[in-house]
Image (cartoon, rainbow, N blue to C red; front, top):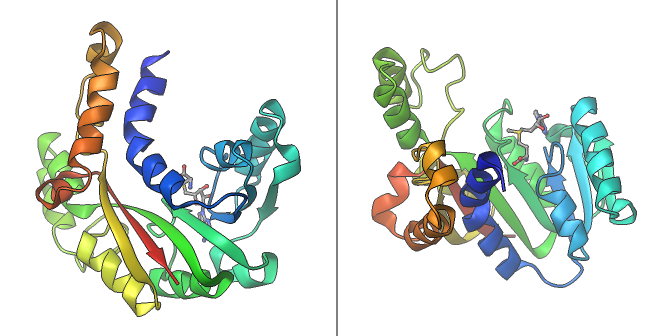
Length: 237
Ligand SMILES: C[S@@+](CC[C@H](N)C(=O)[O-])C[C@H]1O[C@@H](n2cnc3c(N)ncnc32)[C@H](O)[C@@H]1O
């Protein structure tokens, strides 16, 4: 297993654990901004029906290739589009994945309101967003102190041009509540996975397994949430 695969496992294990626990058999899943299908292809392999909606034709082409390689083309549909037009594109869903997308849309509150309307009553949303406190720490540790300063506050115009491209847990939870969702679970994701040197994962026997266990162990501890590169919220309509 390559270092990037090892690190990828440690980065996503907490989200996968939560998703697999939340999913019923044969769910109708919409993966908004699903990109090249990192989640969609495996979910289709588990028997779910997945519709990936993404504005990028390149990403959708890669998704098609991955779906073919994994022999799940009959359970994955890739559609070019964005969250604004979601209601015109997809039918009712049991589960919506919105991973790494709220950061790039113009109006996160409107995006969540649209997703809410796509879900069936009781349907689940898996929301994964970049977490602002960890981004401040990462900038500071890299010596980018002005960038760290600019990221401190949500409204700072110097925070990379987009004022809301990262979220604290409370901001994400407020957005979900505002759109009519009830939050069921919160997880800190990538608390340590991004900080560990790649050579350690390559050379130290058992390091990846131990890192995965550590990520799992801290995921639901609130004291580690501000250190998590991403926050994952499971919510239902
Ligand atoms: C950071 S990537 C995340 C990809 C995937 N969800 C994942 O977790 O690996 C963001 C994705 O959102 C897509 N995207 C950008 N703007 C969007 C919009 N307005 N609506 C839906 N998706 C969008 C991009 O094309 C890209 O595939």
